[in-house]
Image 1 (cartoon, helix red, strand yellow):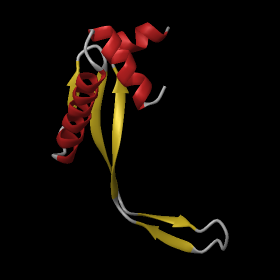
Image 2 (image 1 turned 120 degrees about the vertical axis):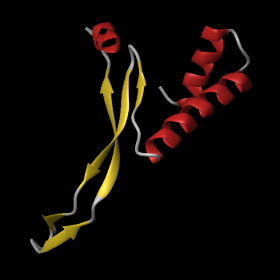
Image 3 (image 1 turned 60 degrees about the horizontal axis):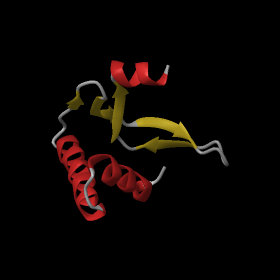
Image 4 (image 1 turned 180 degrees about the vertical axis):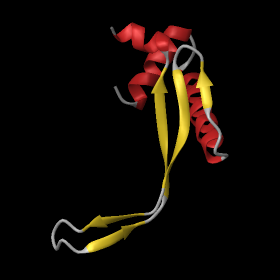
Length: 90
């Protein structure tokens, strides 16, 4: 499923227009992004938790040359599914 298909599903499920569904989805995405940028976690009960994973600087290898390289520290988004979501899949 892509974003357009998700918007169609939201519009149909909530009985709203596609433009309203687009605005709602964009607001949710912006809310998640803003919260993670503040280095805070966002929990949606029954669905899951979005958080930031901090990756320290580390040494890696260039696969072509075998040369040691330094991989910069970075932050990555992380998602942990909630119980209700896990139960829905099993």
